Amino acid sequence: MKKYILKKVLVSIPIILGMSLITFLLLNVVPGDPVTLMMREHISPDVVARVRSQMHLNDPVYIRFFRFIADALQGNLGISYKLNRPVSELLYEAFPNTLILAISAAIVSWIIGIPAGILSAVKKYSFVDNFFMGFSLLGVSMPVFWSGLIFQYIFSLKLGVLPVSGFDGPEYIIMPAIVLGWSSAGTIARLVRSNLLEIMQNDYIRTARAKGLLEIKVVVNHALKNSLLPVVTVMALQVAGLLSGAVITESVFGVPGIGRIAVNAIQNRDMPLLQGSVLLTTFLVIIGNMVADILYSYLDPRIKYN
Image (tube, rainbow, N blue to C red):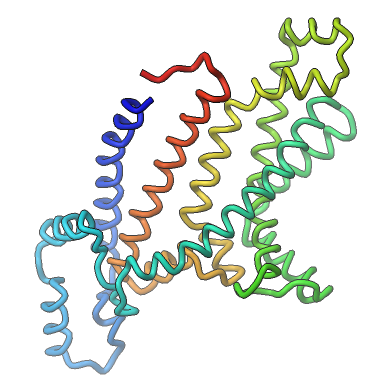
């Protein structure tokens, strides 16, 4: 296992470098001067030229890219053009908010998705199955910004039971967690249902039923564990994706997390801040993949990593 993890770490290095390079090149292609955006209008061209020189923006692209990589290896992600603060400090402040949102949304998706998938498989082609699959399909299909606005209209403007936006207490996380978790729960429910239906056709399931075991014990003790292998991958990647920044949800509900930072960085052409966000996002997705692979070996002892 240790050799496998080391191999995954070595393979992830080119991925991180590639994502950083793509982001860097795209930011240099997008029209607009970050110095002009930072200093606004009515600024002397001489001042703009001096600031560009101080920020090394006149250097060739490849030199700036390698300088960014060299600094990142030392833990220095640069200074935000817009906020004039270290990027690592800004990400450190925003990450706990995204972490709380991601964990809350993941718990909501698991609480909804796994039982819904199990009930749909056990009661296949019934009203229960159609209801949960329709509910799941609605969650997957409905855009997050649209469901977020509907929740805000109903629970904030009409009922007044939850705050519209912000991040200043437990009550502020309820709506964004449900909205974000609902979209993930649909995928989990449909995957659990399809895997469980396939597993329940195997001979050992029929043998367990022939022994007189209750259906709930057959499903939970024999079928469910074997049907969770593909689900674990999706769940781990979903958590990694949520941690990397639920951009739309954080923007709709005003959550000061990684996703909102990335949006503001794009709007302001804040290259160091966006590069730091992408670097953190890529790292979290890679970690999610490794966690999924490790969980595989615990769920199925037949899986061995060399």
